[in-house]
Image (tube, rainbow, N blue to C red; front, side):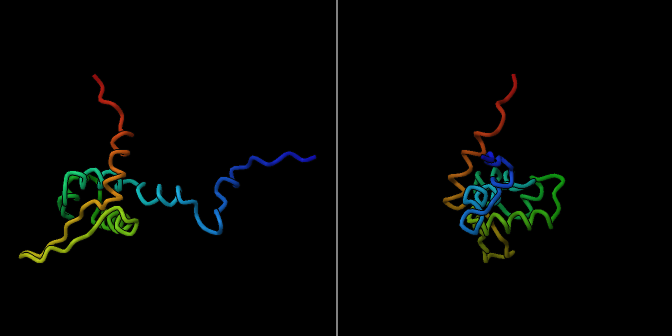
Length: 112
């Protein structure tokens, strides 16, 4: 009688023809800049250029892509403020507010 295969391929097999919900959730908040964007937005609404300054090494394009993906994932909300000068603010949604404490819990404890 052949043994059941324990190949990693089974772990990545789509569930009911789609990606596993946990994988979808993790994909929506992981990446080089996404956790740091969420951390910055946890302090309140933040503008694009302020985020760009908070994330040394990021580019306008990489930041724009990460913001778009967080917005599509329901983690961030984008709001156009129609004051002069016209600007855009990003803030955490209810879902984002639930995720941020988990991100903080994953940070290493400060060393003494």
